[in-house]
Length: 174
Image (tube, rainbow, N blue to C red; front, side):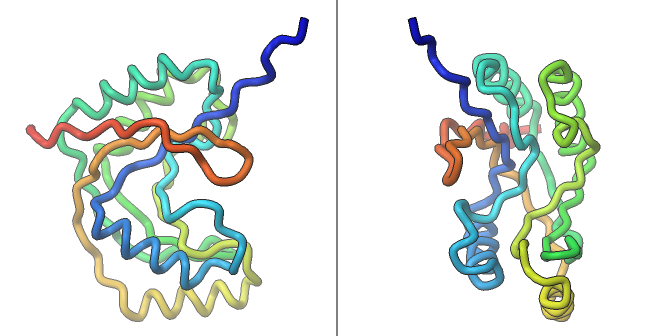
């Protein structure tokens, strides 16, 4: 009478323009410890949404993507203590994230219930001194940039690499 096991959790990330994604992926390959990265560079919005709510998650992401352009500012290099990341600022992203948090509040983990601190990690799981050197190196050449998000990506967490389920493309019309 074996039933199905637990449904794998869902991950929601922000889809970035291809050129920006390629640059961040290259930085992640350069700075992330060898063999420690299962996925490319990403801006995680939700880390572990219960998979049994996939239908509702898809509907809400489609709605969030349909609400017009999603401007972002890559605003600086930030220390993660044992890693480095690029900070991303966007009042509109923060609003949409908060609306999704409110809609999904009963199911969210403590981590996913926190205020959004948008960033793309390019290094993690290294000694703090190595991370400090990386942050200094990245800051030396950093220039803020403005980009438009492409959409929201929905993934299934399979215990290692993620499985991409769908992209919800942002409606660029205002």
